Structure formats: C-alpha cells, structure tokens
Image (tube, rainbow, N blue to C red; front, side, top):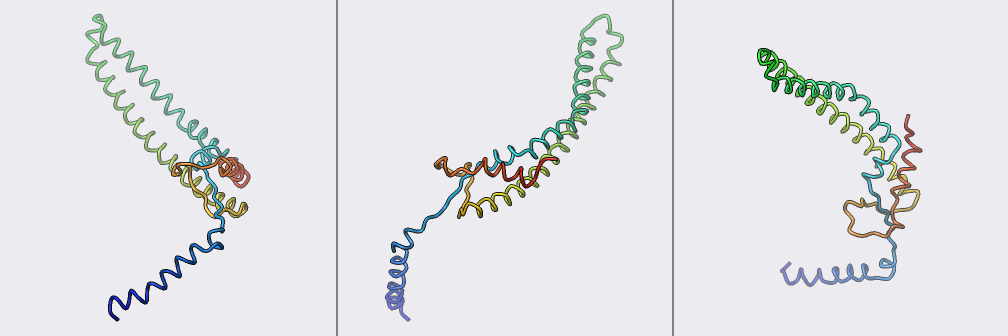
Length: 175
C-alpha cells in the first residue's frame, strides 16, 4: 500500500474518532473530581498525632542528655576563660573534647533513628490514607482525586481532606 493510499484509508477513521469525541453524549459525560491536601490529611489523623507524640517521648531522654552535655560544655568553656584555673586547662580541654564527641555521636544516632522511625510511620500512614481515599472516592462516586500540591485551582466544594481525615480516624483509630 502506498503512502497516499494509506493516508486515504486512515483519514475516515481519524474523522470518525473525532466525531465520536465531539458527540453530545461523550461531551456531556461528567467527570467527578475530588481534591485532597494529602499531607494535611495524613498529618491531621489521630494516629499521626499520637505517633508524633510517641516519637517525642521516645527521644526525650536523648534530648535531655544532649542538653546536659551542652550545659557541661558551656561550663568548661567558662572555666577555660578563668585565669585561676589555668593549671587545669589541659584536663578541661580533654574533658571538653570527650563531651563534644559524645554529643556528636548522640546527635548522629538520634537523627538517624528518628528519621528511620519517621519514614516508617509516614510510609505506613500514606499507604493507609491512600486506601481510605480510594474507598471514599468509591463511596462518593468520584472518578479522580487529585492532591492540592499539584492543583492550580479548585472549587472548595471539591475538597475531601476533612472527610478523609474522619474516615481514616474511623478506620484506624489511634490506640
């Protein structure tokens, strides 16, 4: 088949496709859209609020330990400035270096552990919220739910964030 014959055979098919798309029946089909602020919905759940409090409580002893080390380091710095304690300067510097290493080690450990805990919590919560939003979309007959982070404009009546939070809290109550 030559190129012009192929185009001649293809044109009616293309025109038929365009005609179908422009037909009143297809044009009148309504797409039902919902909009969610996914991050706010997830962080607004009772489970995430509880998990946040649990993380703070878990790392509070390490935070207290860091604050004590910082206080000790400040005191060592003050002693090093005192000319009366010049004889103890070497011991104070060694002690200060040890406390700085301890503080650095604790800081790195806490940051790594806390970030891993946070990611695990958010991962599980995100999966659950996605399931909740899918169920909510089915119940409301929504064809698509988009995140406000990727939406330029939407009517407030389309937002389902608060409904998603309530549905999540009902499905996964904080323990």
